[in-house]
Length: 154
Image (tube, rainbow, N blue to C red; front, side):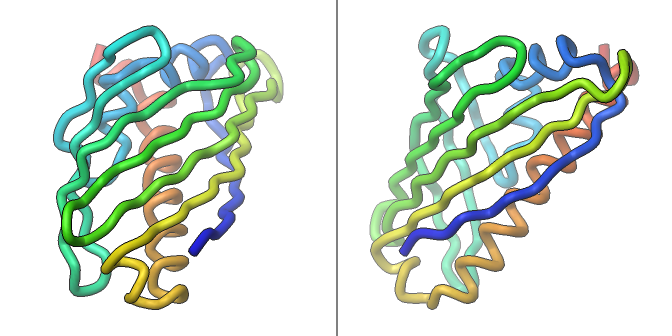
């Protein structure tokens, strides 16, 4: 059961700053809903543990995240796959594109895909689609907050 989610965030930060944040495991971990750990295993690979509640099912997913099609500092593809035991699996990715809107503003556009199987898939496509959309929105709005307000944390 696959779905596509598109969106855009206007981030008050220079392009290079946004690009670096997209490649920073600490920032990504803070933005991924339910993320318990995210560790870099190579330049383009990370391992993640994420706990998600989708409808009545709460599952802990162990998975990996890969960065592909890197075109610094303008675009990349982030792909994740997680196994949640009896709950099933979730996999997805997002093509992320950055463009400048003046020296201090970056437009981040994304097209995300999500696919689930197992028990989760039995919950119905409307619940999964709305949850996927909500999680994507949470990730990118939190990312925006982290990057545009990053002076608070550094």
